[in-house]
Length: 123
Image 1 (cartoon, rainbow, N blue to C red):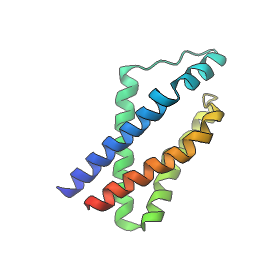
Image 2: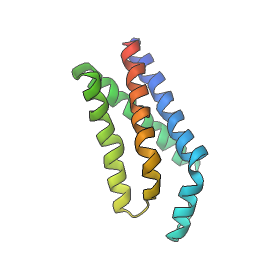
Image 3: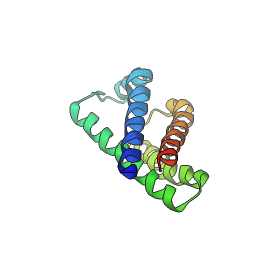
Image 4: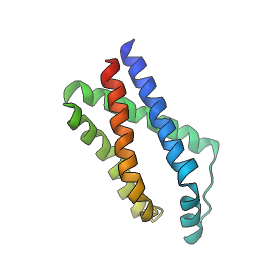
């Protein structure tokens, strides 16, 4: 029961954090960047659903890593595939607004840190 609660609360936190960052704080940067490369940035229901799936997948990854590694290592090992590798991929696809990384890097580290704290406290 603690496992499910930890992953669920952590998943809600990650979902909220992503929504806050990408929809409320920086959506205009995404729209501007997409327009500058001839694309239209849209927020569709399928995008929201996929972000929720991604968020809970990240929470599960953090939970599993927390079982085997130290708190610090859990943060590093979950942040790398979730964020750094994602940014490399979307940069390669030429849809990453690089100026956002100034904000995204520290905010994503806080996101993973808080998710790890939630999981650590509950389990």
